[in-house]
Length: 126
Image (cartoon, rainbow, N blue to C red; front, top):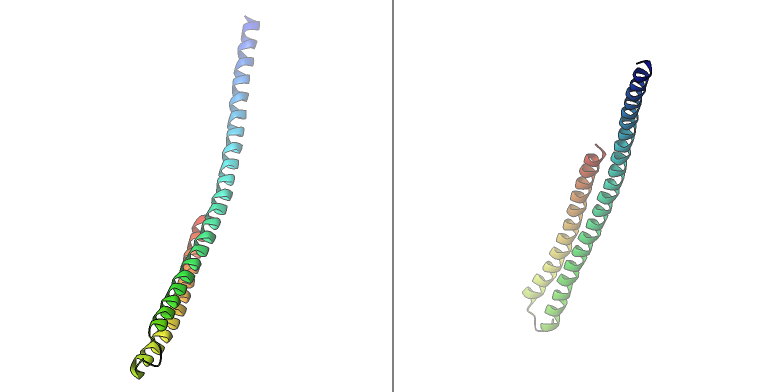
């Protein structure tokens, strides 16, 4: 009977030890997984923001270029000599307006982009 009891005790101890080790390594694994997830999530997010920024700027550049190209074509079709003074004035004002609106749009977009990136970075840090 004595031998049986010691074997049983040893088996229980092994089981307890196994459970302890399992818990320990489980916690370590979960923590490591969480850290990696956080790290790569942040990298992915920052990369996404960067790409979004580039895409937005490219889009603005393209739209501005298209607007200017359209103006050039319009100019080519109507020579200045045949244009009446009033139409020349409107052409000048339209150029001014285009410049102002593109500047405003760029400023606004940069502000919005800064705000959203700050908010998103704050959220990702949480």
